[in-house]
Image (cartoon, rainbow, N blue to C red; front, top):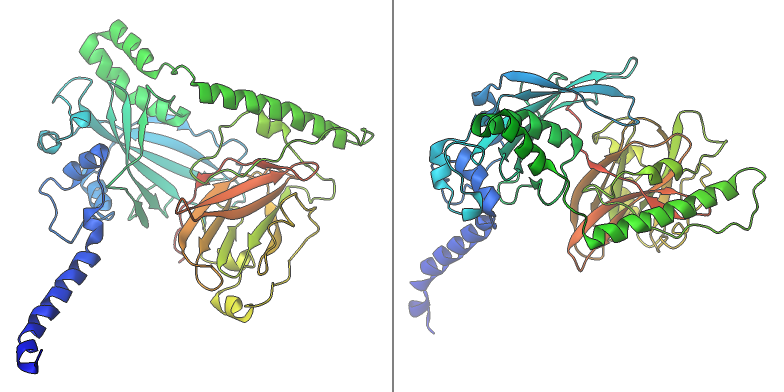
Length: 452
């Protein structure tokens, strides 16, 4: 092909490349949206969005400011378990029906709803007002506002977004907005019993809705029918039996570790860590599975965090959020540390924690661990990111999780990189007598409020 023939095609080729690049850059606009995501999009973007601009979490802030939700009632104090760092009062706004224009824009039959009655979509806000415990600093505490969408009949709740506030009364401008417009999390009371806080919300919103539609007595009966616990599945029954068996074995192991006990008692089986998405359900298993050690400082626990050159872990003590200096606190270093440690394994940083059965097995060529004292009966947050030098390909975005340590207990934290499943999961487990691991229930942790 001569230059004369190829010349005119160059502008067309450049235009084609530019168009291809535009499609690649706008790929998130084609993300799969499920039926419940269409509810959120129809409510927040009734006129649709321009191609390529997509959906923004910041829209939730505008919705919050426009709604100016008026608090209708208090749901009472939140149950924080062992957490003694703060108290939280939960306030719920009056529910309002989703606009008829948004209902008409919803095309999926799963989310169709009549304009009135217990089957229509309604929306409300739950606001958390935080009071720090005496002597506890407020600089790493935050308040939260949750938006929910509910269908009282058949008992369905969509998590419609979360706002985080530096002000403890959830006033002012939120510093973070979290919202999944494609596949929001949905709670179905028919398939799984609602957690206690969400069940309290459902009762507050739906009790008057059922009463208005069916009358007081029939409405009360229908509410209890919707919230009745579903029959356990075979898998759930098997899991419950396993928990009971493990609890018995852990109790025997703890008894054998007591002063004067026989050294020949059997140890409990090893167990993997809990996911940051929630972990196993709470039970007396966690109350009896302790490895208290007299040498541990009063009011403290200890944690061992596994690191390597491509995996960066962070630790935020005494807060249910992740602070900017979490990686420094966890001794994970930075990119410069990773570059200078290629070909060697950094030294472990220990405070005398006994090893677990996975401590030695997790030490790779560049693997090491860091041990730290942490506050007990206060939230502690861990975060991990994966990628960069020594990562063996692939990356994981920063994942954040929080839990409340028990006094005198040793814990381990690590990032479970599941390459075949293309996902990463934070795991935290308490170390049992004999070195076995028991998964610790976790909750998602946001970033801490910005400093002054």
